[in-house]
Structures are given as structure tokens and as C-alpha cells.
Length: 189
Image (tube, rainbow, N blue to C red; front, side, top):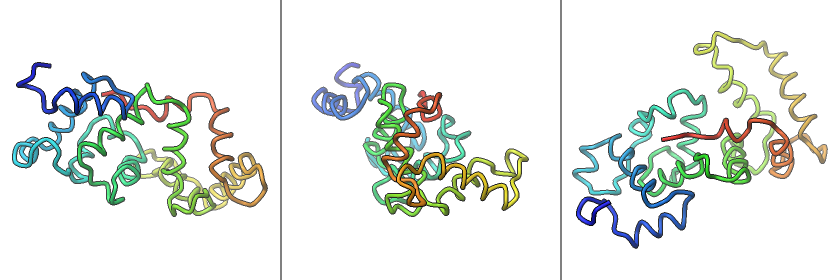
């Protein structure tokens, strides 16, 4: 991590370390991975260009995640999946094994709340199911009745105030009891 070879100086690295779950060395590793996604763009525009969603989707660690595009949309400031390094670093930090459970729950709730109304409703759950099943990828299919039954079961299980949707508190309560939840929201670079 010599002075002449780092993309960031020590004070910038210290700030990134304070704002993320990463060490300075890990921040530099994340930047290296970011730069590898579009090396010419980084060379032309410096250390913090905005990469397109398509460029970020080249990251192999995201490839198998059925929510990969939605994840990028949630973490990009514009909501379009395009990100600069700071947004990418924030995403990778929250997906890291060092991020606490509550951070992962916050992130998961935002991903599942497709209409961004602060509730996970039946329409949001329809989309979640379609992302998870992906017949073209998995070969699995659910009939409309089966999907509706899954949605009804999820809402019945998680909706603590019986308002027909899942609030953040309902979601937090349900996810904190779910074994393996943290592992499903983790990416290792």
C-alpha cells in the first residue's frame, strides 16, 4: 500500500474505513475489483467514474444472484443501477460478511419493496417469487394459484398487525428468526 501506488491517500482510506465495514486494505481491494470492471473508463476518468449497470453486472460474485439488477438499483443514487466507486463500496460493504444482521435486513427490505412504499405488499411478493423461481433458469414453475398461496402464507406468517402487508418491523422480526438469512445476503470479493 505504498504512497505512489494507492488510488487514495491515507486520509481518504481512513474515511472509507470509518464509513464501511472494511479495512483500508479491503477498500483498496474493492477499488481494484471496481476498476477491473471497466479499466479503460477508470483510466480515462480517474478513480471514481460512474460504471453502468451492465459493467457492474460483469462482477462474477453477483452473477448467480436472482436479484442482481434490483440490488444495483437499490444501491445506485439514481435508482438505475449505475454506480460510482463510493456507491459500489457501500454496496459491497453491506453485502460483506462483516455487515451486521440489521444492515442486511434493511438492505433486503429495500430490495423486496419494489414499489418503494415502505411496505412489502402482494405485488412486491409476486415479483419476489418471479425473481426466485425464474422458470427459464431453474426450470421450476408455479401456477398462479400456487403463487397466490405462497404470498398468502408469507403475509399470514409475517404480518404481525394484520394490515395485509409486511411493514419493516414485521420483516425485521421475521428475518431475525430465519436461519441462514445473513448467508444469503453476502458477497465475498
